[in-house]
Image (cartoon, rainbow, N blue to C red; front, side, top):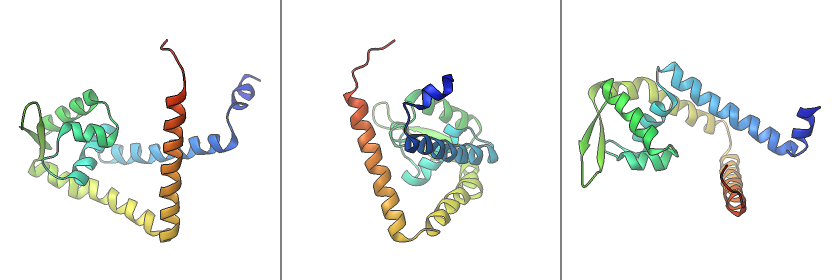
Length: 155
């Protein structure tokens, strides 16, 4: 009875979207596990792939929507495993550089995941891809706006 009452507040679309979203996250969690990385470690290497060698920790945090402390901890682990090194930049900036071992990991483990993603997109028409991205962006903007309107106090 209690679970029925909870779902009354959730539209069928929301329930379905949440399920898809969680499955989507599970795909990446599984990919990270297959390559022997934490999800945040995987996300960091993935971000380096997109932003390039020498990117900054704060940029990874912003791009991946991962808290700075989590990024810092994961980078320290990747550094300890000799996948990357940190180089001091201006002020408190720390540039991230892949080591030879890190570059090999990218080529053998991260690039194949990106290729699988590209193949998933190629399984859709250009119009389907465009529409999917437009709708996802619209949903995200609507959700952000609605969450900002909420008047909630901290517990």
